[in-house]
Length: 416
Image (tube, rainbow, N blue to C red):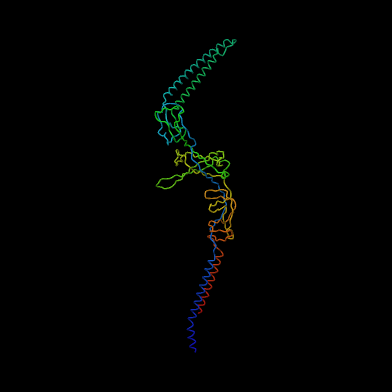
């Protein structure tokens, strides 16, 4: 009987061990499923945020206009005659410097006129000397008879005045003759781009004949409109403010792209009126040496459409946000409870891809950069990169429980 009991126990031992093993495996698997269910419960959307800090911002005003010459001159001759020489650079598209001789008119007649007037002046001066001597003699004779009244004619005063007038007339004629002789060489009034030329060698030109059109390239101007909502950011005195003038130009085929030329300029003046059609005011920006004649810079050609940027007033304590973050003057922030909150903001200026905001936000606000697909006011979210305290605590508790269960199961097996 005792032997049968021992055999029976030996037969049941494997069954008991197997049952305990199955129990331990089931417990571990159940804990794992519970942990997975715990982790799958968090359905909060994840958002990226940025902490806001207000700053001072200097407003940049952008406008557009066309490069034009400071002045354009329709050149005409002041003397008549035959064209005997012209400058090789005096052609359409050519550049000439201030004082360069553009073309020359035959001078013989004008040189002869100068000689004639010089002779007339000498003759008039000689006559004046004679009259001065005659007047002196008449005055001496009059002094010998102080009791006799002598007329101005006797004293030769009118004759003396006539001789003096003749000298002045001769001097004026000589001056005109010399001026006409100098005008035979027609010179550039400033550094210029030749737009057109209407004369050639051997051509006879008359006084006042239009011969060319020149554009001043010492300076260029751009007239740009400033909208009413931007005018409030202009300082009281705009003349002298620095500006940048940019134009995009195509580069060579091999480089395949667009190059941007930027030149420095300054605001010259405000035209002082508001356009009746656009309700905009207009500023004039001046650029020196636009064609780079006196410096090694890329030319800004007349007629180019350019972008002008210049600094205006400085705004205090504003927020500069990308436009895609603002919808219908609404931005989203995450409050201290990790809930979405919609803020209505006041936009005071648009600058390119950004809005300048003065009201509706405060420092340390958590601005949402990536919104959920359907954001709702009060919706609880999870901030990307931030550690979730509740989830961490739950995970730690779960890990402790799993460790305790595993230790308990191991102890049970050891006992068996």
